[in-house]
Length: 158
Ligand SMILES: [Zn+2]
Ligand SMILES: [Zn+2]
Image 1: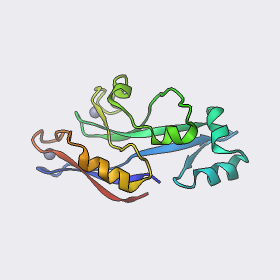
Image 2 (image 1 turned 180 degrees about the vertical axis):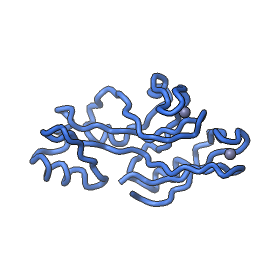
Image 3 (image 1 turned 60 degrees about the vertical axis):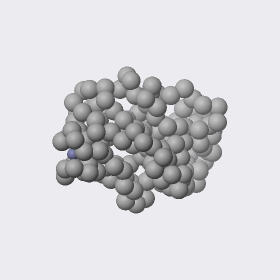
Image 4 (image 1 turned 60 degrees about the horizontal axis):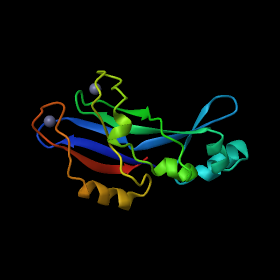
């Protein structure tokens, strides 16, 4: 399950609840089923009778990544086109949205190309994730007041 995080400014009241990422399985009727970590395998098998890696190869697994816009401060889930990695589903799940991947995506709210990833490289692995956030020095400036720094707080697991 992705970690639920609070983005908070240290100078003003700007606050946003976000989630790292979300993976979907396309069912035969076109519906999308949200896969919850770490039960994806069981959920997928129950819904389709197939294993995750099989479904992945068929292109039926998609991940959306949590991105926050540093211009307007809005957060949403975005699909990022990635080359299918050979490591299968887990490779997709732990893939981190890199700045390079974000260049061609514009904010759903203000249209600017100023989206930043709110997640670590280990989706679902909270300890690795926390470590990553503490090591990460590039906090982004507050979109609201422009003076504060945005801090990430993990508020729970969805
Ligand atoms: Zn602020
Ligand atoms: Zn925006």
